[in-house]
Length: 334
Image (tube, rainbow, N blue to C red; front, top):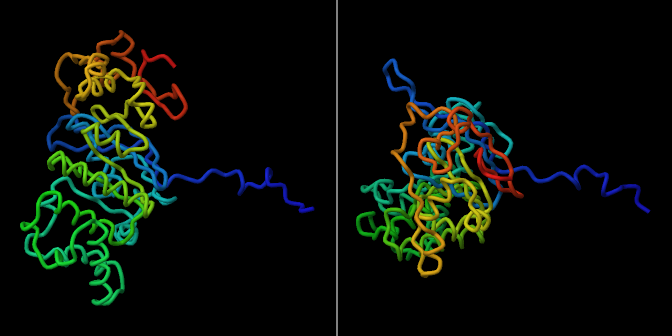
């Protein structure tokens, strides 16, 4: 009989660590005058597992894209930690970050502006390989052909330029470039918002298929909740630089808890009359406050239909109201 007890073996009971841990992240931008800074992101925490898609959703200006760039350290953080595979990126210098960048890639929203109009597609897709690998020219050309195959473009596209492609085809080029180094993490900054609806579905299906094949994690920044429902495993809802709700995809769409999340989902078009009746629009009073002078207490208190006196003076802490489902709200029942 073996003397090893599998129950007592620490290696057998330790849960795998997340690929990405964001802890109390703050991104404050000075205005250059003697006024308060713009609090674009103010104390956001979440994790992202390997092969998982976490969607960041919310209104324009809520801090979604700022988080994406802070995760990749394209913006240096004001405070907080960004831990990628055990390494706190906020402590690294530029050279150390450069060595890690092949494992973290970004797909931009504007598929045209993110492609150099003077370079052929083959050169654009090959650029990460030339910068970060020792492959020779022939091996790089072969890899570029494989990447174009992967995203559903003909290999002859390597000799063409960005203006010769449709928006959906250009976004496929961006995806091919992002996957050239087989990264562990891809930040997708509203990659479908500038595309026609039919092309949006093609790009989202492509991303889904690629994740199933290669297992990369996605941080999917979006405002289109129908796309999020199709692609994401978990959803994080942001409002004015704060994370107000975080839940598994199915739980969030079936049972949203935070009043802001309910308002967002109620505004999503529903194709059937019964569903439309169940999701009546929830009017939000007032305008979105400035991130330069956010409300005291709960940042949603100035527009919330359920606001109580406590909400205006005390910031709610994120708490678990169901397995894996966290909400920052005073009035939500556990």
